Amino acid sequence: MFDAYHPASPAVLRSGGLRAGLALLAAITLLGILRGPAAAQVFEPETFTLDNGLQVVVVENRRAPIVTHMLWYKVGSADEPRGQSGIAHFLEHLMFKGTDSLAPGEFSDIVARNGGRENAFTSLDYTAYFQTVAKDRLELMMRNEADRMHNLVLSDEVVVPERDVVLEERSSRTDNDPSSQLWEMVRANLYLHHPYGTPVIGWQQEIEALDTEDALAFYDRWYAPNNAVLVISGDVTVEEVRPLAERYYGVVPHKPVPERIRVQEPQQWAGRRVELSSPRVGQPSVSVAYLAPSFRTSRLAEMPERPYALQVLSEVLGGSTGRLYRSLVIEQGLAAGAGNSYDGSSLDGTHYTFWASPRPGVEVEAVETALRAEIEAALDEGVTADEVREATTRLTAQAIYARDSVGAAPRIIGAALATGSTIEDLEDWPNRIAAVTAEQVTQALRDLIDPARSVTGILRSEPTT
Picture (cartoon, rainbow, N blue to C red):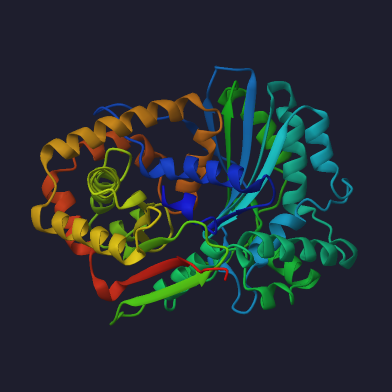
């Protein structure tokens, strides 16, 4: 998928490395590709809401005696105050620095001593924390996670060194990676006004200025039970979860949380092109990104079927059997890889991206010409009913695998609920995908391809001598 070529994708993990991060993103992206036979349900979750506003979702999965406990806050980098880019991700790091009852790092030590694993990540629209542990350790995780929801303790002694850790993270993941540098510039040019053009990790000079007061202000503003969703998946029932949730999360006070006010993109009049050359580039590439609707914005525009059509389009054109790979890689022999990506799970508008990487000895321009020719051919010819049917069949298999994973349900459900979708939207997914027609897919492509709402990114390998 495209993210594999652009590690600066819009989600930043606290730790675990790039491979873990991409695996998580792939799981989250399943939100956009779950589908199955008509009338089928996906996770069959049960949900309830505590008096303080915390929504709790439980998904039973009896494949192993373990649980994944994942807490989602409905706040991400796009909610940051102007001039404080990176504060959402910085606070995510600081959430591991202790409370009135836990010393810095003690929560992580407890997880490790009990044989669990944990991590956290920040994206454009949400921030999440999770632990996967044996079933009998669930209460311990709930007690400590609820504790840091309202008892975080910060001081300059822990904040300043952690800011250096974040700066080093930015240096290693973006500043020293040409593909990440280019993708950061593509996003900044694609979103002219909307905060989605700002990197989740933040701009370096603004990260350097963040301090303890900034972190506590962001924490006090957004971290509240009524601005969070708790999703628990595994060998557990809602009857077992409810009393624990009431005992530990139910005592956290409800508090006012501001409305998420986002600016909208203005009319865009001209396409943009950004290029980066570096001797550190091992694999050149070309990408073309277009602004696209998300599930939420499509509903607001009274075109709720549009993102489902775009998901089918992404499978028809992309994937190992899609048109782009078949033409550019197999038939023409110009590219080492080719594909496209679309993820509609964002609070505001999103983007749809086509990409290709040339084979050794092939110029980037030749691959770009071939990529645009395939897009033009799809515009002229449209997609067929057979292609739509085959795409749905392939993706149905992925939905089955998603149900097998104890971690997939919390990730998919949490991302959906944090970006304006509902459990009913998720569970009805198979039926909505089954209703997509070839005409809808073709029209979605034709509405998408607007050169004035696009950015072309070129990554070149520069000779070292």
